[in-house]
Amino acid sequence: MCFQSQQEKSVEFAAVHKAEPCPGKDGSPAPWLKMPKVTGLTVSGARSALADVEKSLTKGSRLVGARPDVNPYANPADGEPDSWLVCSQQPATGTPLDSRWQAEGEIKLHVTQPGTPCP
Image (cartoon, rainbow, N blue to C red; front, side, top):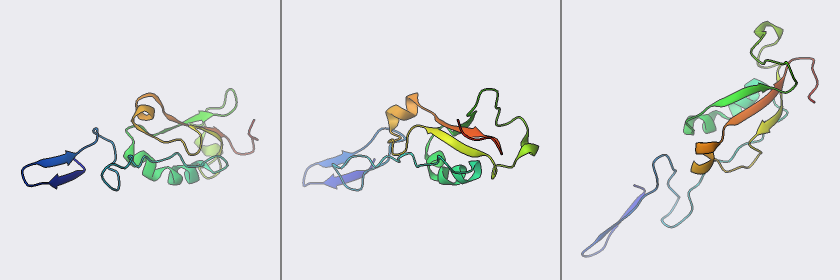
């Protein structure tokens, strides 16, 4: 429940679906988080930028190799998260992470290992 108002003989409740954020005032749209821009950041920088998003979503972000045969988890000794670069992201910057998106989408960070340029 987001809001409650009481009249002389009635009470009105304003509610949203479970896991939806309450709007700032009754009748306003829900203030969904939007996907931040993480392309060009290191993996640790992207994780920091996504901290609030990942807290509110049921799914975290997933690292994906930006080039064929690149496994971002293969050789941690080849580079700490500060040296891996995010080449592209899904969803795009500014995408509202609403309930429909949460049911169907996931955050993918396409990364490349140190010394390997983005495709």
